[in-house]
Image (spheres, rainbow, N blue to C red):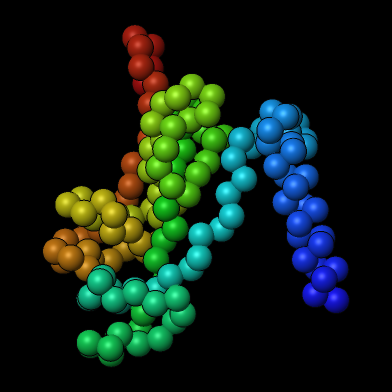
Amino acid sequence: MIKHISLAFLMLFMLGNAIAKSGKTASNTQSLSIDFAAPISYTCSMHPEITSDKPGKCPICGMELVQKAASQYTCPMHPEVLSSSPGKCPKCGMALELKSAAPYSCPMHPEITSMKPGKCSICGMQLQKTKASGNKKQGCCSK
């Protein structure tokens, strides 16, 4: 049974390499990057240096660990290009920008984000609604 699984994995790996080397894609889709989901991690809101791969309690203060928001990067010119790590857009070469799905963030520590209002775990400031980027229109007739 293990031999069959190993053989199937090897065949898929070789097929993927052959497609990548030929420069052709298996399907004609809009998405340019196949991104595996980042592993879920948990942290203490009072001690952000404490991280875990499963929910639990902070070993320092005993508070419940909260799920960290996953980072996602996108091209400002091509929003369909998504990545879980920084890099360059494969279409235009521009640097990918951090895109946050969380509607609240700290004005002093933008890496601190939340899905609901609250306070920054670093400085204690009130989290503010994040502004939508890339939707601003310039020109004489914009309102």
